Image 1 (tube, one colour):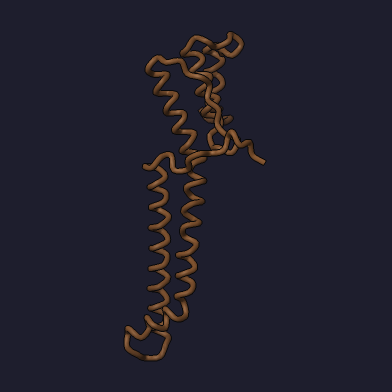
Image 2 (tube, rainbow, N blue to C red):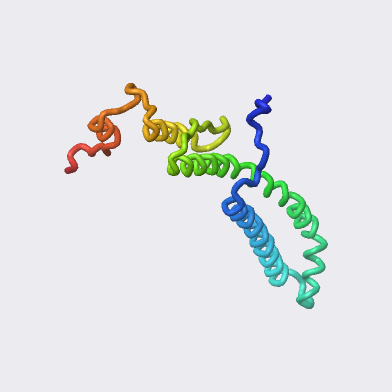
Length: 162
C-alpha cells in the first residue's frame, strides 16, 4: 500500500502542459470518430443498395451508434488517465522549477525528492548536486576533477575513423 504521506493532492498541476495533452486526446478522438464515420459512409454508398444519401446516416447510426456512445463514455476515463500519467512528469518539473527559482534568488534550497513512480528521477539527483555546490555544501568526495568530468562525457571514437 502506498505511503499516504506521498500521495498526490492535486492532479492538474500544470494547466498549460496537461491542458494541451487533454485537448490533444479529445481532438484525436473526434478525428478518429469522423474518419471512421466517413469511411463507413463511403463504403455503404459504394457497396450498398442505391438509395438517397441521407438514408445511409440512419442506418449508420443504428448499426454503429452504440460504438460511438461507448467510446464517448470511455473518453473521460482516458482523459483522467492522461492527467494522472502527465502528473508524473509535470509534478516533478513544477517542483524542480520552484527550487531553481529559489536557488537563483539566493535562497537556501532543501534537496528535492521525487515520488518513486515519477519520471526523471535523475533530474532531482543532478539538481541536488548542483544546489549543494552553489550553496557551498558539496562534500569534497563528490567533487569531480575537471579533467575526469571531461573524460566522462567525451564521445567514443569508432576504430579507424578520424
